[in-house]
Length: 147
Image (cartoon, rainbow, N blue to C red):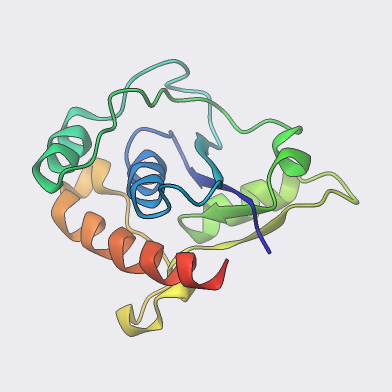
């Protein structure tokens, strides 16, 4: 059973902090360690994209304390489950995953097969934050039932 979950996207300012906020809210009181990170360090220390933060506020989630950070080698032993938002994130994670690390690394949306997709689209360029939040909420509820 996973006791810790790390959500990962490219820059850790849109999808993965959204998943962190949603999942943290859903898992409140269950004693899970939940975090997010990016495969790049482009936004290290920065806040979530203002459009993601605004959509989060509209839905009752708080992203104000989340800061972007890059995935570290230690994350592969600190987390039981590392969830990638898209196939490129998954490849990038597997490229740096140390042999013998404890983390299971997988895609997020297969937890929600009713969505008929396995990648969370990057809303940074497409400006589809509401749709991305919908996907993340559905997948988060399904993930929570499995751990």
